[in-house]
Image (cartoon, rainbow, N blue to C red; front, side):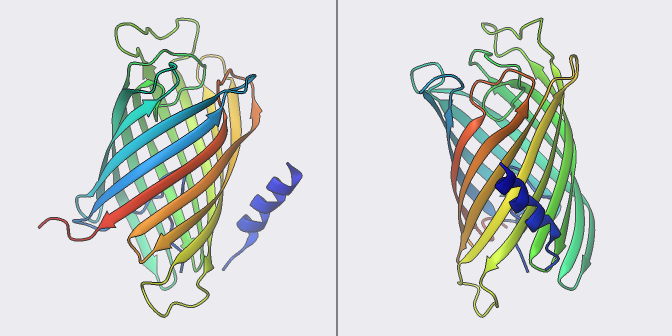
Length: 269
């Protein structure tokens, strides 16, 4: 664990052209306008206290409506209830309201929201609108790009609701939560740009946390990742999320995230 903290501090201390594309969080920047993106997320999470693994498959469609507005729609499928099945989906929107661009750097801020619906059983205290809970979320994200280093921080409010008529939200659990994160990423390759077809390699570390509103219980995770950008259109993310601390019950906090993405420029007029 000390090595992981050292890695995070090392990234945070580097002041060194990088994509601000993170694996576990969205930055304040948007995808190009009039573009269409297809994403396929795969999460393999080890269940706490057992040798079983949860597998979550999340196909996602992304739309760059204009330079400031980005829209997502996704579906949630998993084997949490023994049989692999569709469990719900969500709609996500992000609007960039501030952009301060300079040579080799920029600072941007955006507001975002998510509405999720899910029919799976509610089996943990953590509120997760990306595959577990129904509800809504609203937040703000700020991202600073400094040459080859990108730093991003966000905070959001979440409100969980019943997972359909058959899975009522437990009365004893907190329906409200605050999420917060800090992400640092650095472009490792190429050292110098000569062609847009060059494969880019980014390394990043993200700190991810949540605090419940009613009882104040919380968790903090660390998630190092490697990312490949191929010909400026295809993207492959490989990350691992590890719980550092938790005072709330979580069924499967640790595991891998492997994600594939392809971007279509000028997909519509």
